[in-house]
Length: 280
Length: 117
Image (cartoon, rainbow over all chains, first blue to last red; front, side, top):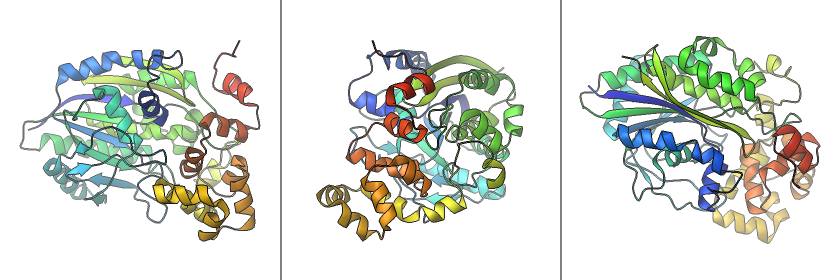
């Protein structure tokens, strides 16, 4: 069976990629943010995964409102970075873990999920930025990817509990896969931010810091929270944090919090990451 | 969901009503992901907006870069950000406009950045 070697939670703010593109990594605004990820990058170099499962949302780049899948799973050979309006980015395309992705789709449907299955699709910063944060800017990505899209744009978005259940199926898929690949799971999005309405610019540092610890040691309250609670505590776009639950549910109930990092603001967002490993 | 969520002050959620109301604006903005459409937008903005059937009110909100009004008309920020990519306009200025704050105040009071100087 394949092995889960770690669960990561991370922000995927587009300005992070733009900062790297513009060579702003070491400017006063950005250096503390990027420096805090160095331990995560080192962890990734040491962990040597074969497959990265990336749970993220599209931001009106790949899916328009004409069709909005609540959950979508990629089974493509290749995922190109999508043009988000600023022109193409100079990062490599992502190679799909095709067979494993189909296996995950099989498991999902067997367990009564109904995902959209995507053979040909591009990926936006929701997947790009986490990959850059943990793998840097390689000539080719050292892992194959399994992208999972979660609708967090148009309401109704899925419940936190449903994201949790998907994580359980993800774990079952990994453990029932006959290969011996090493799999890392990235739950992405957040932390607190709000881009729309008169409360725009809302950041809740206390809630963010509590999240980074709680997602490791005691995720149950976050699973039980309503979507309204997420919006209230983390802002309208901060509700993206429900996607970390897919990652967390795939891990053991006992995990070790290996690394964490928090910085605010990254652009308009509370930003950070955790690295979790299953406890022995 | 939308009734309860509507109770969070100053926090519009992109629900059924917003999605229906903002469909044309968002479709126009989504198309700016393609270079040819960005060129058309830059060449003759009004003609580009007309080609997506925007109302006079919607057009004036877009052409004035009235971000607050675009969101009120159902524009979702992730789509209309593509307009800001053409301009370009920093996202923090869009945030400040929605909060009805000066940009420097917004950076300081909402995002917690130190004031310049």
